[in-house]
Image (cartoon, rainbow, N blue to C red; front, side, top):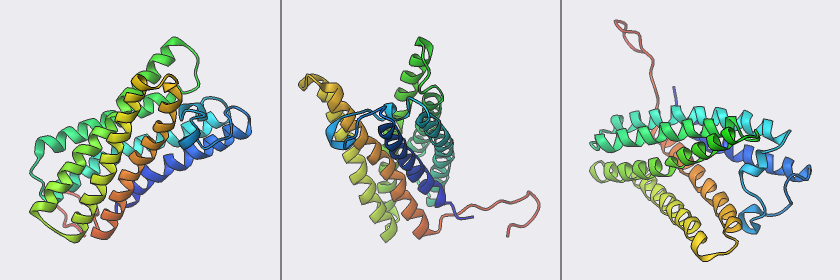
Length: 229
């Protein structure tokens, strides 16, 4: 069974859902019309805070986060198939990826709910989901290491693309943190940068999709004692 559809869904489903939620929220007057990547008019969470867009947000983000759990398990198996030797890094990547997926589920489950308990869960969910950036960085390091040992056109191109995406993600994330020190209206700057971080984070599995599609990475299901087909 070809597995390239998994990173494709992980990348495109939340991307489409977030932008659809923004259009719905803006149409209903819940957020202003603007280019959120530039104008800093709204945060990502604000696009799914009220109904009916909150229903769309949850209906798309929670399955996406669940699929992300599957994605990181498959990435872990991919490196085992490639013969990657960075076992500790691979397991750490898997742990961070799974924690990030669970954090996203926890965040999306209570988005729009009122109360201190819900607010705390959202904060914890956002913090845990940020581990995705670290998991992607560890993944990038492993692809680059495997590409050095087993050089191939697919791995080399994938390594370069993932390195560029990860570097951009880290730089934008650092810029978001520094905005607290250098800008009085840091919330608005942070909102705009968060949109770019989201875009870059979702671009990472899109690169993996092309790598798996070209390499033919697939799974087989077998029953013990019976030959595989």
